[in-house]
Length: 198
Image 1 (cartoon, helix red, strand yellow):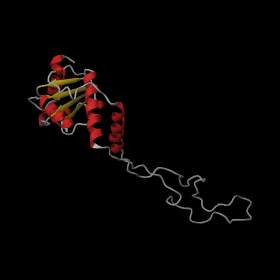
Image 2 (cartoon, rainbow, N blue to C red; image 1 turned 60 degrees about the horizontal axis):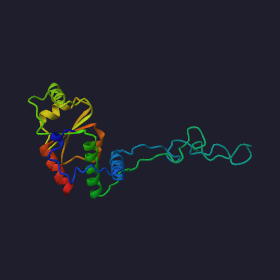
Image 3 (cartoon, rainbow, N blue to C red; image 1 turned 90 degrees about the horizontal axis):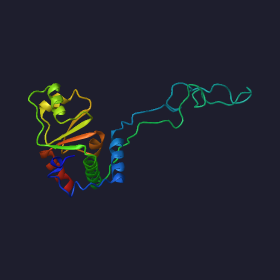
C-alpha cells in the first residue's frame, strides 16, 4: 500500500497489531450464527410402524424382539442422530470491536486495503462497475465499504459474484477477512474509526 493510500489513518487503530485469538473466537461466533440447525433424524418413537411385537417372547429359538422399528433393524429408528437446534451464541461487544480492528490491521499489513475519496457510477450497469474496478486495479474478491449504499452501485454490482458492498455501520470482522481486497471510502473510514474508538 502506498503512503497516499494510508495517509490520514488513525495510528491508534491502524497500529499493525492482529489479535489472532480474538479473531478466532469472533469469526467462530459469526459462522455459528449463520447455521440453520434444521437437520433431523427419526428415533424409534417417531418412525412409522412397529407397534406390534413381531413374535412371542419365548419358545421360537430367535432373539427376543419388541418392535420391527428397533435401531438394530433395517428401517428402524436412529440412535443419537441430529435434531433441530440453535447453534447461535454471542460474544461481548469489546471482543467484536477488537476483532474488527484486528481484521482491518490484517488487510492493512497485507497492503490489501485501498482508501478512496468516493465510489460512484453514472448508470446502474455492470459494465460501469467493472470499469471502476479496472481503474482501481481490482481483479480479486473485493469488498466495498461505503457510508451509504447508492442504488446505482447496488444494481451494478449484484451480478458480480466476487464483489460485495457493505455499509460502514454494519461492517464486521468476517466481512473483512472473507474478501481479498478492501476498498473503503473516506466517509466510511470516519464511521469505522468512530465505532472502534467507542
